Image 1 (tube, rainbow, N blue to C red):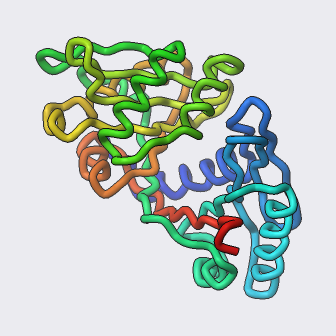
Image 2 (tube, one colour):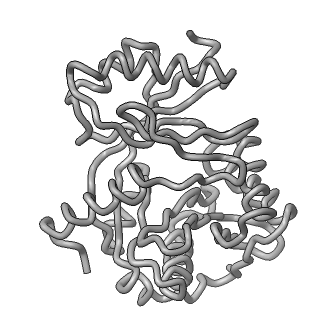
Length: 268
């Protein structure tokens, strides 16, 4: 069952309040703070740094952008992200970020699904596929093999972030592999915080030769069942163009479009 438009707007407001403005740290040594007109995530070493939410207008945006650049540059961060949503204000915030030296990455569609409905999806693996829950370094390394094959790039920072979560906050992550014998062919994870209504689906990727067999759908269904057991109401995805049509068929609705704007010290 797809969420209707009126309900989607209520869900979006809930998402903004809980996941963005009311964000919690997503790394063991990270923290979230409100500074001026933004909420930002600050983390050491290989952790994720960035702006999650903003309350700006034409008169305050440029100064706030400059303040965040000065803050993260002053911490010695090699890069940080301003996570922009297409309904953020002012309407030309993306243009202002580009003028300040940020570079946009490909847009993604912000989608949400009802766990109560998604948990009903069948979870029978395609022929030749078994699921493996990731709990240790060996499992994370297999996930990184899948990511390299599915997305065409290595992710050393992500590897360290996942290992940190599994060691120090295992209750905030559920990671899974689809295996063809001893070969990992797809991987995905769910990140959540106890007591919150939303959990995020991340990293869903399948190596090219195994696509089109229902594995992505299987991993969504598997995580939805886990979310239902934990009392989570909604699953949220920043969907690529490849993932969006699959998720729409599964009943996910669109809340908006998000674009990661990246600032790097080397380019400044």
